Length: 140
Image (cartoon, rainbow, N blue to C red; front, side, top):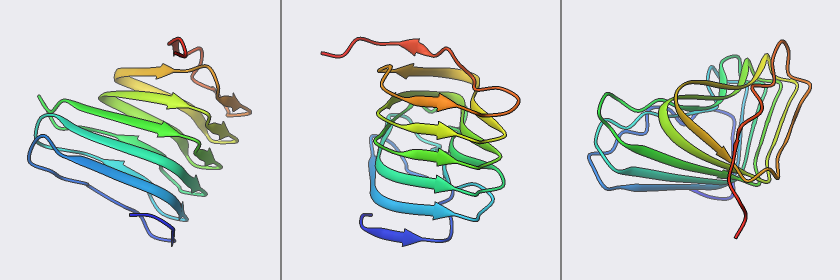
């Protein structure tokens, strides 16, 4: 999916196994969750580039794989602004770079899994918590 102005949400992206999903140049606004990635099969990978999640009442970006489903997502050059929570991760791995997470109810919420940051993000002004510091990874 690319070059979209979606005013609805991408929800429950379910794949069997060893699948990839790419979302680029897309606006996700005024929904419950902007995008929820919830695979049920193993080895599902996704990449979100230039995706803007703004004004969603729940999560801007929500990574929530099923039990025993290995999931990895890259969010790059994207933003989460004025959502309930900017980014939520429960049991997945997220690589975050060049992104803006500002003025959400919470910045980054990690209740399982991990968020690895290239330390090129702007995460600030989220109340009550930015969810930082994140685990840093070196740029190569």
